[in-house]
Length: 210
Image 1 (tube, rainbow, N blue to C red):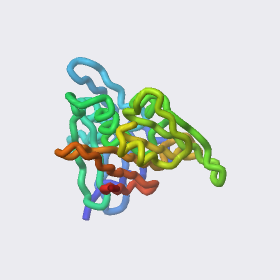
Image 2: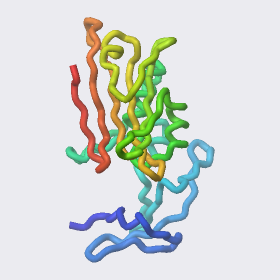
Image 3: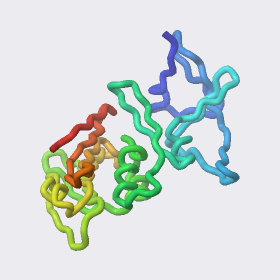
Image 4: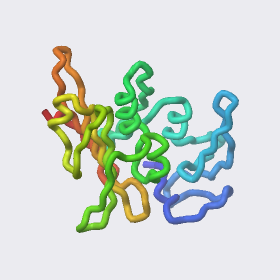
């Protein structure tokens, strides 16, 4: 079966005319084009590469959705790409939970994360691995305080905050893994905690916690 081998991008310096190929694979050219969205120029930066194959332009889904005001997630287990728009009428907490689920991705820099979520509420190093971890307290009430890297499930249940996010960073300052704990309200007003986890291998998991 023919397919793209995007992994060939990794660890190589590629010129605009470089051909990306492997035996029995589709050959594609890096395509140095510029983009405008509603007349506003947008740079793909180093995160994205544009390909040209057989006269067609192939653009990363994430680049397009983000510049059209939406977000995207990929379920490796299901082979499913989901495109979801920001909840315009939601609270700030709802929008940040959406940003975590549909804008964050492994490999993002600390600068990119701060642009989406602001500064973390708490950060530390795991002694055994010297790995930096950030925690975000999303939708927290004024004066909210909580220490450490354990999830405040009691606070989530009581309504002291709406979500907590934990980001593990690689030695190179890129997202390695992240864990989101967030609340959904039932019709009767009860609060239920859900989890959404992105692992270092890119796989995801989500479940009802309680």
